[in-house]
Image (cartoon, rainbow, N blue to C red; front, side):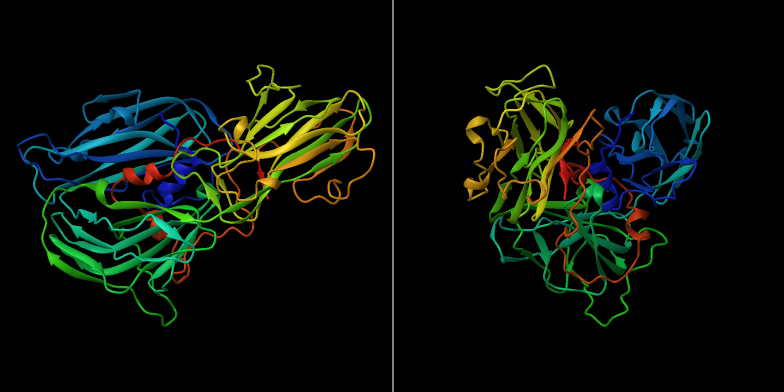
Length: 538
């Protein structure tokens, strides 16, 4: 069964596609798509499928090693829906009558996928027919919180219309975002939720008191979500659009940014946002009467990428330390982004930058971070991980403005060589010719700094006690002790706050967590590739 990456999991939560998070405890929690609407049975052509994603959360910090099963009771769907397992959505599942049993032998810490179920309306079913899929789990020594997905034939089908936006911007530019959607379903939507996800370089100009800005968390670093709720009945075959301006602005930290906008029906039991203040309320108005079509949860969302003309100054941090022969010392190597822009490879998920560390004569590396590769002097890859003359470290795919990135090493001094010089260089993956030549950085002169071992004279600009973060520790150690290795997930700097200026109306945490009826493929796509190791962030 597939494990969901932290970013993908955070994306599902931010997009309102998961059930409410439960307090950590002994129970392993089954969750997933809470409601599924099915296109009515047509009798012609291939049936139009919907998807129910089922997941499980291990609330502990360690993997559970052992066999477990998740059993689905499908008996309530007789005459309502046909159920099968999507090929890419799960494995080790066996169907017997009205029971589907999925098996695996490990439960990773955190959130992971169990199975993706494909559902179509059964022959002879009618609009309004409904039933539930009930999921229960079993494993030795642990208990599961059960879960059910409500399945109904028919329902609203909210389709987000694509905005005509320009991708090239300058700092301070504003663009109107006249969001509009159509209900192509078979019944009205009883209230809707508009979710506007923006990366750090974008913010909304206007404030409305039925909208709430929710900054990102450590699993979705670089993103914030503005949530607007609208009461009323939104009828089939009508287009609805915002009745007041909603302008998106490129801030002074903008560089490469993305905007995701999606719509879904207000989850059952979720109260609309109501601000205590007297600000203006954002509304929706019908724009036309047109369209009809099938239920399709894949078109609730649109997204757009922006490229803003801006720069970021990556300044390598000099390091100077002293140690006697036979001593082991700890040192961290990296750089600081002095901005003004944040740098993010949002689509590829590739490192925003690299740090090359050239080791001075007389020293050898005895411990390195996981995110750093050993290289030979000619930049060819080296099989032995320790004792290399050169190391290349990749950052995460995001480096915020005013953020420092560092990679901790341990080195043993085999021989004292006065003024032995190495270097620390911020660069990219494109090869030695790209060292110190980051395309967004206009000041290449400070992309490289000296790494000086046993200087004959103390240079106040490189002394570890006065140099900026990251600093080198000149404290010798008789034997290497564990130093923190780069974390697989990013931790934002204390000043990191994604863009988003719509009014904060207070807590309504249950709204997004309650979830929409279906998983949207576009949301998963924007959350990129697998996590990459990266340096410590300050």
